[in-house]
Length: 76
Image 1 (tube, rainbow, N blue to C red):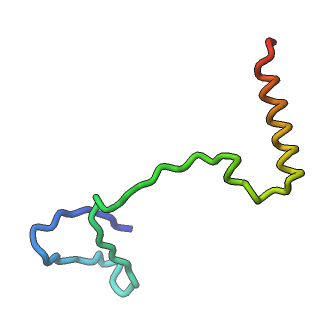
Image 2: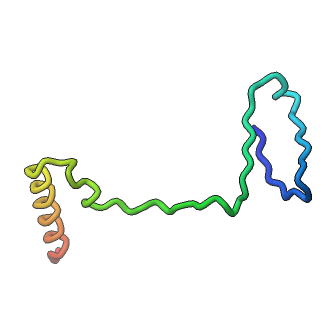
Image 3: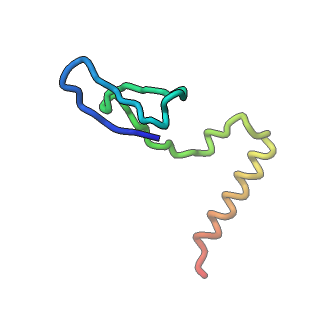
């Protein structure tokens, strides 16, 4: 794989293909680096699972989490 970045000085660009790529299908992409917007991964919350679990399962999980949180607050 060959990857590089350039800053063109004019509209035309001469592209030389490495010998090992001759005769192969290749992909050429062109985009401005500043156009790339990288989104940070969003924190997953229990609300993301709304409607995915049955009410019974959701209540069991909620009760379990509530119990674990109460245990955290106990002195050891």
